[in-house]
Amino acid sequence: MTRSVWLFKTMLFCMALLGMGCQPKQSGPPPMTFAVENDRLGEVQRLDEAGVQFQAPRDWETLSVGQVDTVAHALDVEAGSLAMQPYRVFLDPTTQSVLSVARLELDSQGSFAEKMTTYGHILEERFAEDSLRQTLFVKDGITMAQFLVQPDGLVNFKLVMATDASHMLQFDYLVPRSIYPQEIKNIESSIGSIQHLP
Image 1 (cartoon, one colour):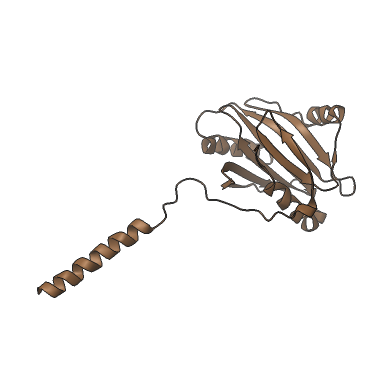
Image 2 (image 1 turned 90 degrees about the vertical axis):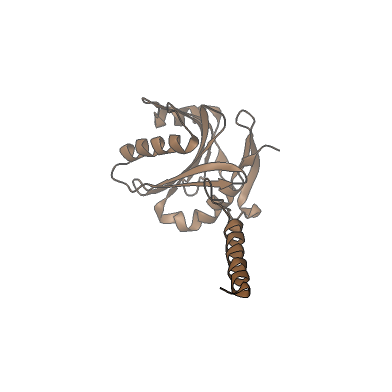
């Protein structure tokens, strides 16, 4: 092998190594962005206890504390390894769409991803006849899990994020399936507004 051929092959080998080193390594959930249209959003809501702020869709009314307690009782979600306590509930009086923001407690060990796998199994049992889609992603530095179920003529987006080692926060968007195409941009803007407190 001539010296020039050897140099050429060595140079190609080095370039290949450099190219491999430049490839981005995907570790953890992929990032996701949401199109936020501010004119579709209501006032900023702070949840100091969770270290989060968000905005419900515009014109969705905040339910009173008594109404939130009624919703919590109606949900009756405390069972076995799962407990949920709503912080805020919003209602669109025109479409009857609902946003519930609740503290979620899951008796499960492991990483957030492992807890979300467990939660996915719980949801599969609860919504056995409905298809369940699950996605894990990162939005503005916040790791979130999204579950999509469509029970009884509804579209239900469940977004879960960790607030500390044992508690999580769940955003439940419930929209009648018939008007879902008209509401999707409102929901996307609301999801996009979720962020850590400044």
